[in-house]
Image (cartoon, rainbow, N blue to C red; front, side, top):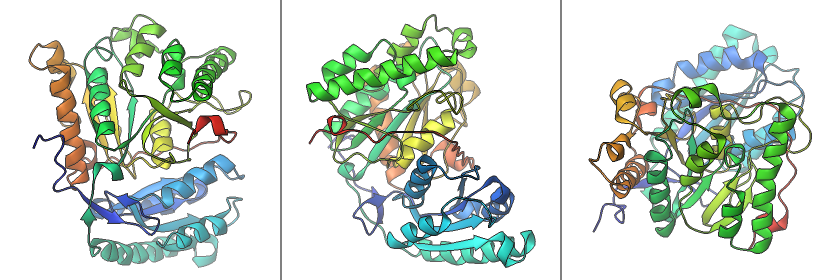
Length: 404
């Protein structure tokens, strides 16, 4: 049996909704920036044991942020949740607490203004997390299949080799993983400008094809109005010549299989297949640059159910994620040698003539199996827990976006 068809050793944690997680984290979630310090102090005491810090800095309500926070707190990689509130913010904390408890997870709401302030809140929070982690570590695992996994891909700090080496290798791995039953997700509509007609042809229905094309055209309009795109100075410095070249490289990560749907951040794919995530704000420009923050777009894919993210880079990136492990792939051996402690897969071997795209694709799949078998990625081992969430506005996806 080849290593890509074998999933012996892949085990996870069964949740009440039938999904399975590859981790059993305890999340400490602050609900306003004023509670960030207390939550961070609680989380840092348990960082090496599975305590993960996430949060929303805003004070006034946001349907988008609430949806993402609820999705993160009920993510299959999460076993218990401590919500940390200052007490006077407008975040709908009781509704979030109810949703977490309804999902079958242990949950507690800690209100700083009501429990005696900073020191008291930190002490109470650490005590609760200690107990929650002990319970999490005692949970038995169950076997995992590829059909249990949701995997996303993202690129950041791309270079002139990204579209030639590591990104096509991810695309090859995605084709194989999809054939094995995994649900797959790619995004960056702002970095797919010029590829919309190709995606339209891959859609499973004509109606979905039109929605895919419209999502990219929306991103193009948004950036024209904003006066700023995702093609940056770092890309030029490291060998990318045009937006079209960057788009083709980003597109290569999606592989060649049919596209099954178009989703918005915080909504889950209804069934298996390959999905595009629309990460560009709906409506007029309101909240600044929507997709220049790699950490926020990773967060959005995780909120849509991704168990792990395959992140590619050319210039070099060290980011991880709080709730889902990140597999880091690099396009060239020069950066791999410099950042070997942070990189899981060196795709530069393709340019070196040592391996083929298929070879590197196989190694990416082996990393997926390793993560789903409980082994940490490089970013996990280094303690990376990046998380970013700000204000955005999205309209619900219409029926054409998710054909049956």
